[in-house]
Image (cartoon, rainbow, N blue to C red):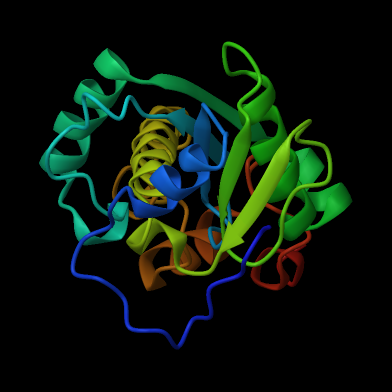
Length: 213
């Protein structure tokens, strides 16, 4: 039975594998964690990752990507890639503008789960909304990246992958600082928008961008 854990519960110091083990004890052989990166930026896609960890080979140090530094995230990404099933997917700027950021994020999550090798038995989704077309049972976990190792692993995969995309785009469109701010609305990014204008990678449905058009 899916259970939403409320945001006001005491968060653990580190995520663990207890929810996954509980689901496995109930017959869910493979449990995937799903998370996204990039809901808040003014530019770039929203990226989601789905990860099925091996309970016998859990990398040490997995945590919510926001609690880790860049070097630790990259190291853990490589370890996760070496011992887990991983799928990363995106929703484009055009899809964000057409659907809104919430529904585009859910679409990216659906694509990430669909990209796994084999459909998992159960999916743990960060947040309080479950995508509608996962093809299996799912449980939303509020603050899931701080609770579940699988979701935390997915948060690392999504964050590092999206940051790399934004660094590539920064070379194509210099001046906005995307290599540093990943498209988030920092003062430097907003000042560059006013000076340099809107690029094809900016989200026109976002108020800060829309007001400049």
